[in-house]
Image 1 (cartoon, rainbow, N blue to C red):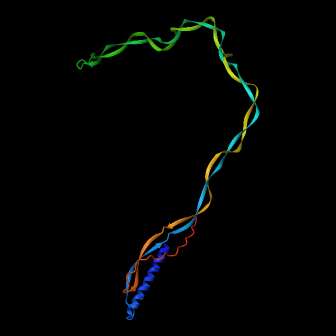
Image 2: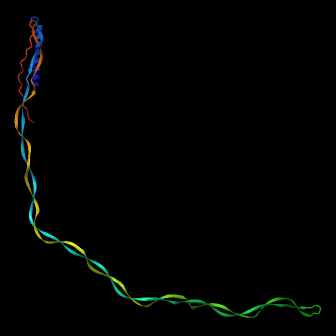
Image 3: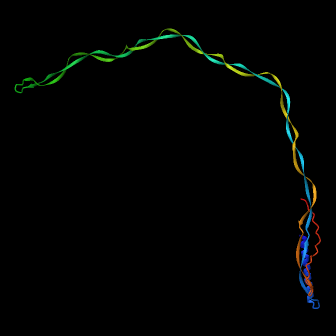
Amino acid sequence: MTTVRVSLVCLLVLGALVVGSTDALAEDPCAPQTRRVCVEKEVVIPAVTRTVQVPEYEEVEIPVYEQRCLPIYKDIEVPKYATRNIPVYRDRAVPVYEDVEIPVYATREVPVMGTRNVPVWKPVSEPVYATREVPITKEVCDPCTGQVTVVQCGSRTETYQCGTRTWNQHTGWRQELCECGVRLECYQCGTKTEKRFAGWQVEREQCGTRCETYQCGTETKQVQCGTETERVQTGTRCERRLKGYRCEVQVVCAAQTKIVREWVTVPADAPAPAVEPLPAPPAVEPEPATVK
């Protein structure tokens, strides 16, 4: 494309020069008569190519490895066990009894004595009084005779002792023991023999059997004592690897033909020129391609 652009620019500059020179000739009256004619030309633009290096690959089988752990064994003496039935015992508490002399009791009625307050009396002689009417007298002197006489002018009540009477007077209290009832009394009338609980006695008895494991010998056995790492091939895998490079011509721009119009100065009496193909421009060297 760059080459095409350069060619077009050159043609345009050349046309301008021709036009300028024609104008200069036209100004000269002694110059021959000319005319400008538009001429069409075919221009062949060559293809633009470049050489590139194309990588070539090939399928390669690569072995695949992995690490695995291998157990390490060693012989050891392992105890051998068997089972047997062993009786199982348990302790139980058994009651213990003993003969005991127990007193026998009976009841009886016993009088209950109490005290009571008894009043104390004492005979007392007391005088008996009575009343009587006693006349009141006074001496009256007769003024005529001058004789003094005793005259009753009234009476008065007089108390006098007419005798005595005896009665019992309460002087206090005295306590006296007396029977106030009966009570039931429990008394021992004998003894009897009886069995009495005296405690517990621990007694051992068999309540069943249990299975016991015991060592009856030894046996040789392989036991894993560790591991070791080993690298082994487990298969292959396909991988594409670069084999090399080959040169290949790559077309950047295909060849094409273009029609270019150009003004040409010809004599006035000359026929119109035929369309002639322009010579192809020189081939452009391809640019070396770089492989990324």
